[in-house]
Length: 168
Image (cartoon, rainbow, N blue to C red; front, side):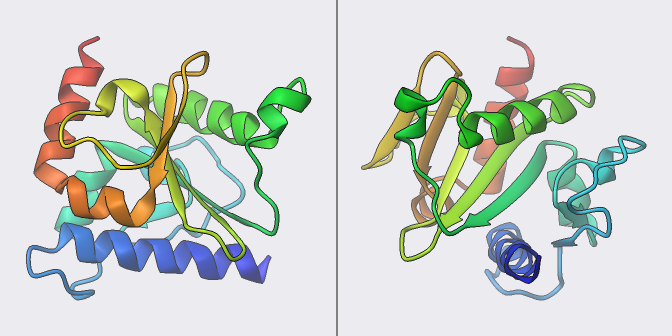
């Protein structure tokens, strides 16, 4: 799926800029996994859609597993109208894969013509609080605008929050 692969590369670049102290895309920290779309379960680096490429990327992967979804129609209404909506299916699959390595799932989604969202375990929400969020208490997930996540939370802060979350 060209749309999905292209989106995974976009997310890898955004997270690389977030990880690099100077905010640039070089050195490349994360890139699209060769196994994207077909998790093998053999190694930590195989979880999700992004693989580490450089030192900060490898550190990131010890904390997070990232799944990227770019769909024409992603709707949260399915949570109210379907028994098991796509968003929760994606989350459950990623969370199961991440649990084996004690890493935190990040579900990054883009619906055509809408803001990108990032979903992560609700206990990671700390001040500063995002302006807009969707919280699914029964599933333990919070979604916020991806660009707001990148602005509000730096990598060191997120690593500290994940360390606390791991000791739950």
